[in-house]
Image 1 (cartoon, rainbow, N blue to C red):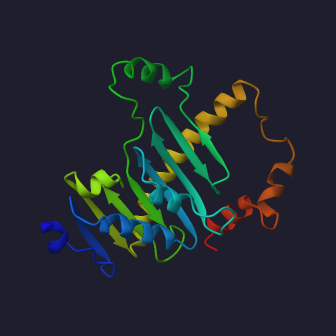
Image 2: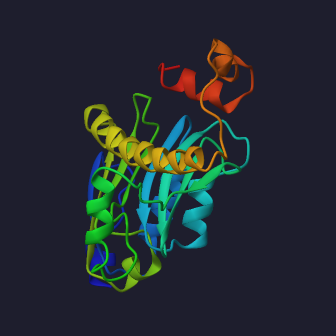
Image 3: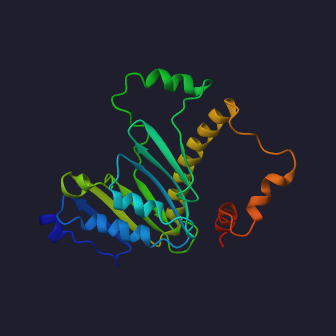
Length: 219
């Protein structure tokens, strides 16, 4: 209760340092409000099982105009969400060559199945009004009312949002590559067409790939 009274949520502050445990889950309420407030895009990498209302907010409504790219680590798998909640991929494969041999060897002694420990969200990354949520808080009820956690909510800092956003996209692209590399090896997907027909979807009105193209062009 002390933190609830002495560290109240302050939505108007451009930089807010929050702490837990607190009562009433006001921090989770604020996180949901920020995520729902995204108007252009949403980037996220999260660990552990999330409360339904946080997960629902991250995934949004099918076919809305918010571009979504993210990774959620649950149990022994990483699920990637791209463009729309109807499209996702599971990315747990360790590739057979290169650095992956070292990773496979060193994961044997790892306790648990945690593959990603980052907890960060960036809303409206491509706009002039981004918001960042980052810290030790894992967006769970336990982190709100039971654990000793911290987090920053940073609003309007485009320079920092660029750095956070690119790091989250790096995670996303890494695991998406693993997913498609495994699919390609199993001949479950085809490589790009040799002509330019592969790009048609990126210019088709209403296609999510077209939305991705214009968002990352700053439109």
